[in-house]
Figure 1: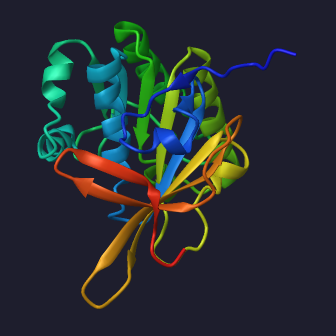
Figure 2: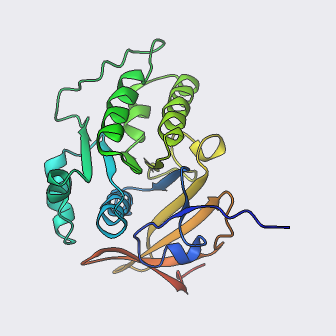
Amino acid sequence: MTQYKIERVKTGIPGLDELIEGGFPKGDTILVAGKAGTGKSILATQFLYRGAVDYGEPGVLVTLEEPPRLIKRNMMRFGMDLEKLEREGMLAIVDLSPAKPSPVNIGEYPSFDLSGLEAIIMHHVKKINAQRVVIDTLSILAYKFKSRDILREEIFKLCAHITSYGCTLLLTSEIPAQDTGLGVFDIEAFLASGVIVLYNEKISDTSRSRSIEVLKLRGSKHSSRIHSMRITDEGIRVWPGEISPGT
């Protein structure tokens, strides 16, 4: 019996693909969760940058929190020139940060829907033939709207439409400081095919340890351990053979 082989999308994160059978399943939705300062936005943007530069896969970055000028400045620290990718048509940035008046008319509960956001994202996806999409961060939506059920339904429809076009979608979600779960959505239970959790735990009075866990990834034999991760001069790097302290 011939075993079905899942098409993989390389993450562009050194060491991460070794934990997930070579990459994310193409066309899946992946949640990247973690508390503030764990590196979620860096990982997600690195996924887009390396996808464009190393694998010729255009991407769309939807920012709901940080203005694009700050994202570009911060990523240049790692040698990642997002503006150059924009000029080359390999990256589109959708600016829905609080600093800019939103072109999306999102009604208040109970009339809330994401059709306007979906239309903008899909316009850019089709314009540059994007194969990777990042939405950073879902937590912003949770702070604005009251009904979790309606929000889940709308996000499900949004993600389904994006991935039906063949895009691999990364969503980031911030875990509140005192939360022991995966953030306000518990999104992994009903939406994401994969969940990646980032940690930045205090291990002594003078040091912290960064680590990464593949909590789940459907259709993949993934590592069940928590592995060391660092933010280097070239971005995020994972050490597959190095288990995080305390695990």
